[in-house]
Length: 337
Image (tube, rainbow, N blue to C red; front, side, top):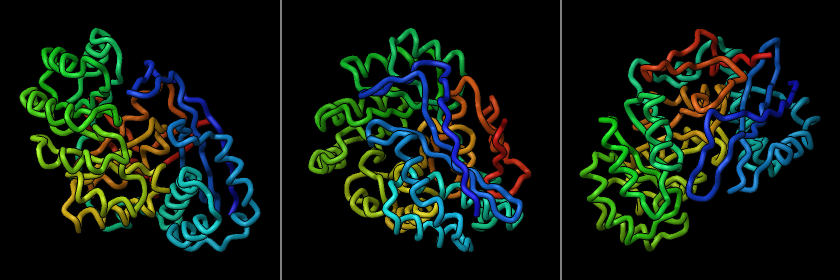
């Protein structure tokens, strides 16, 4: 099995800001696995919060290039076991795991959602993310991209005022993501005000390890709360069930589709709402996420919509928020030259 890596810097349409960082470009690593004339593609983006760069991922993967080349590929799950045994970061594993799934589907000549026995005729609509900026800029971004659901990034001294002002300009559903910037008291105080402003849920309002604070929030918040930074890997799901209404699974954080499928199964057993989110991936990563749509309650897969220029074709999201699945098997990805 041949492995090829490509590094890209993806320019964004707008500066993207959350409570702890801002950027205009998203660096990403594309992994390609080729076997029997078929090529599967996977992706993992860099992330300063988790101290991951494209160079660090490339170094990890190329360190086992020879072993990948000689690996007897049968299923993505067996390949994932091999990768995790090599001590790679979850981000590097993700890029290869997504490529392995795309390759496997192409070898089987079926989309992944079909191989998983799911029906893509019904699926949740992705939100469109509005990063932190001045109220005027945030309003202009909404008007530039009319959408049925917005994720509003917060973590400023004027969070409630921002939502009040944005609500004047749209009837769309709002989801609030504070990216660990609030305290338990702020969350409990803000929740009823935001509920009146038709906010659907809050995402990761507290720091990832503030379990005591989240217990307090769960007892008093009038809005559902979804874990993000608190839910990284499979072992986090059960702990989150005691402190959150649902979880947001990120493929890059957990190590790809293989563990994500297990996390979804576990979350359903525990009665948690299930969301899968993106980290500003291109259509390569977004097409992998889309294969999970029939199994989800919520989804945040707007990464490719935030880019000035994409690097691949695959799953498309129309201006009406409709998802168009490609006829190509696997995740349906073709890399552009």
